[in-house]
Length: 241
Image 1 (cartoon, one colour):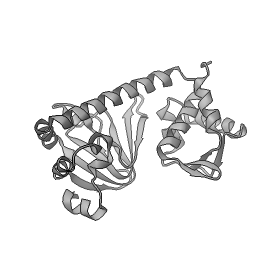
Image 2 (tube, one colour):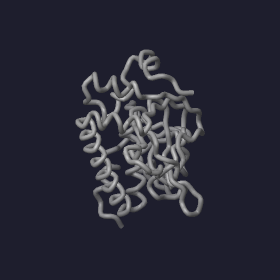
Image 3 (cartoon, one colour):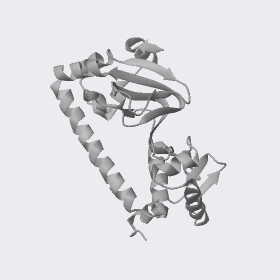
Image 4 (tube, helix red, strand yellow):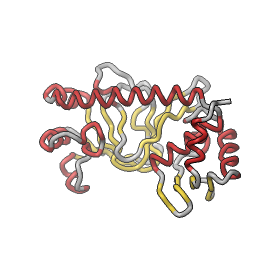
């Protein structure tokens, strides 16, 4: 069920849209005006927020929980693209009329999601050209970053892909502990492996190798500790073989 923005924002004591880079620099007056257009909804694990091919009719901001973005491969399997957490967003194609969602967004853990519908967002941007410029600048940067990631991953061998995955997870959701950077895995190994084009078996073998080398420790199936991030990062600089 959707909740009016003003009520929820007073409860959490923060600007929902102000948590993402796209809107963080806006003047308070503009931010408050934009937040008046926001609808909030709570989702349960396994819920689809949007499905691949649906009309891209809203910008979604994750206010709590985790969301998985994936596409279906020709063989029917999932190609996981990203895991989104608090402050992340998707659905920027809502800026374009007639656009379709390029991926499915499925809730991994109970989530609170803020949404601004296309008609309201476009009207707001037409009235606030400075905000439109900021958004376009950020989206161009995201596109360039995505192209770099695709190019790098395509040239990596399996050890480098596994290392890149672990370092990315550590940067996005890691927590510093005495044992190293702790990563709590919300996805299964198959989903994680698909993010970098590996099979579950290959990813597990590479993690076992890193463990033998003293770079990684494991605790059960859902916890990893990166004990030597420098060594993992060095792998990325090696010539793929």
